[in-house]
Length: 146
Image (tube, rainbow, N blue to C red):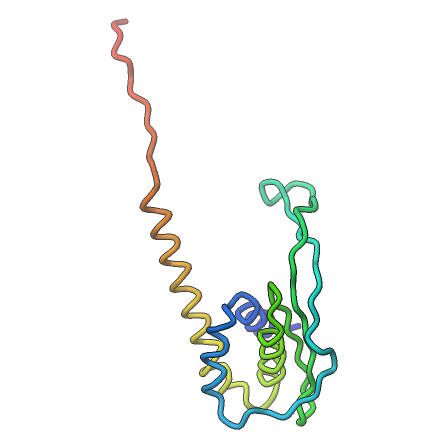
């Protein structure tokens, strides 16, 4: 999988379903498709590493929904999203397929770029909120005579 595809699949997976719906409506000529895998809900094991360098350990399970579609033009797309939203995974799969075809520029400019900017904006707001609660600790010399 190329880096562009990893990037847009990440954006689709991490975006809120209502945001994907909002930008989905901007696409003209909705594509015809057939399901290769209807949206299905399951669980995956989330793994972590202590300090990002230690041995991997099982953190817990997370619910996901996955879907695979094939467009009438032959492109195949897959959508994996967190949670139990079948429509979100279906749209992610269709958009993944569209981004691999001749309409990639249109879909990128109308859906992926706005979703990425929206997510970065929310991330920035969250970071500013966290920074506002930052406390700097310092140590004072006791001032005792030597």
